[in-house]
Amino acid sequence: MRHVFRSTLALAVLLVGVGLAPAATAATAATPAAESSAAPAAPTCRHTDTHPLLAYGSAGPEVAHAQCLLRTVHGIGIDVDGIFGPKTEAAVFHVQKKCDIGVDGIVGTITWKVLHSGC
Image 1: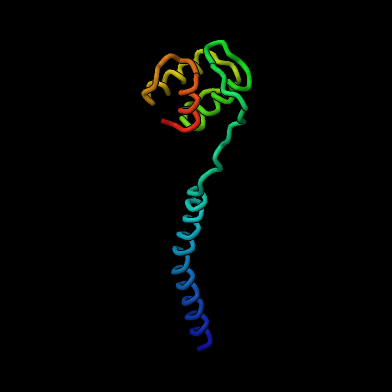
Image 2: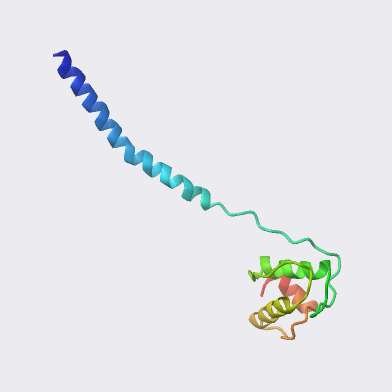
């Protein structure tokens, strides 16, 4: 009788464990998805006090600021190196065309506003 009781108890524990295993697996599988749905911290650009006219050949922190805005606000994958070269110029052309503002590849007053706020 004692052997039957132990066997029945072992079977009951096994069945309960098997019944809980899918729920535990589902909870564990849901955890990474919940973590990945958290929004990443928004990247920020170092601001400069001035927004000068920038064009091909310009260099410095103001160019780096414009490049950072092109990356973070407009999602353009360019390097933030502070040098207004062909890739930066192409990115400025792209944003100006997309936002339906004057397309000249130069970052002036209107382009600065669009860089900061989007189209």
